[in-house]
Length: 128
Image (tube, rainbow, N blue to C red; front, side, top):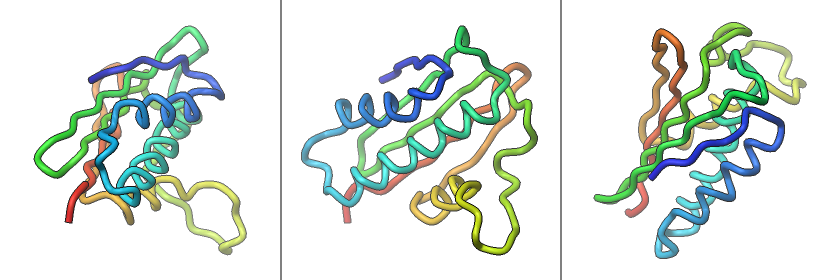
């Protein structure tokens, strides 16, 4: 399953809503909540760090089955540094924790640079 989003401020909310419409209603609520949080964070990073304008689109691919859900977010490349670099600081920041959340909740995740895109993906166990 795939859907496209405009690379704008509404993209994270639209991604979360679209994902909830696609996920199996039988999926345990903690897994659904974790998937919703992670897609929101990854899409927000794509909007913030991608070389995109409102004309550009973010592609989201979702696959579910076999006790897992996998989500990949593809944006038009990186302009503002490495979103996976993480941040060190005094603990009082109110941003920069998105991929740390993904790292804690996902079964596995990664980031790939393509010539014209950046892809951040994650997998989440949906049962057991």
